[in-house]
Amino acid sequence: MTAFSTTQPIIRRKQHALDVQDLEGLLHIHIQIKDLKLFSSFYTRIDQVFVLWGSITAVIFFTAQFLTLSWTDQAMLWSVLTLVGSWGTCRLAWYWVTVERLRWVVYTWVGLMIGGVLLTNWGIFGGGWVVLPHLCELWLGLSGIGYLVTAWGLRSRAFMFSGLLHFGAIAFLSYLPEWQFLLTGIVTAGSLFLLAQLQWDMHSIDDAQLLTVEQKQFNHKQRELRDLDL
Image 1 (cartoon, rainbow, N blue to C red):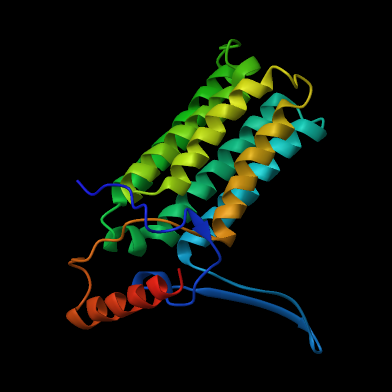
Image 2 (image 1 turned 60 degrees about the vertical axis):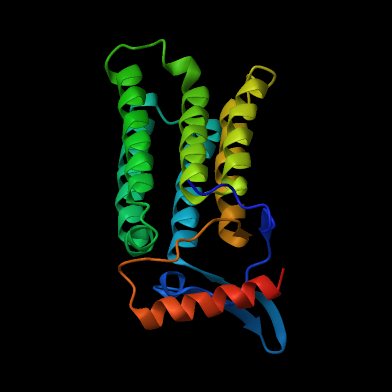
């Protein structure tokens, strides 16, 4: 089993020498007014998944913190957004995870999110009131598990530390009883937006059966260029 790489930085600025699977569906955002560049970055399909879930978690937890929607209305909102996020994850990430042989990571995340929604809805609609005071712990814990599973699949220290951050945040919830949803939203959404904006370490396979010989050679050259930029 391949060990975690210690030669790559845990996180660094995004690099332009991308593999074939990263170039698929690449989104480039460039905002400029005359000669003034306000923002410029590119987002792979995986980055787009992070942005999608970052937006979803921000809406969910900031709504819970600052708006006076009923629990039932929020449960329906969370359910719809989670289904949208799960569908979007499969739609955006499928080619990449197929090449990297990581479909099981997507299955794990979707299972965790659907399981979290079912537990949340049971707490609200099914009389499981023991769940309601611990919703933030529940979602931070599920996210932490998802990150650690992803870290194992990608051999990524960045995802491992993100998972540990989510577990660590659980310990601080009791010190901020009135701001638990805000803290949870900052940790979950902030981690996702950060991962979308930076390049993280991972071990990519060299013998992807889905790629042609030419594509594998292209990826090899791209990785050599990234190594030169360390």
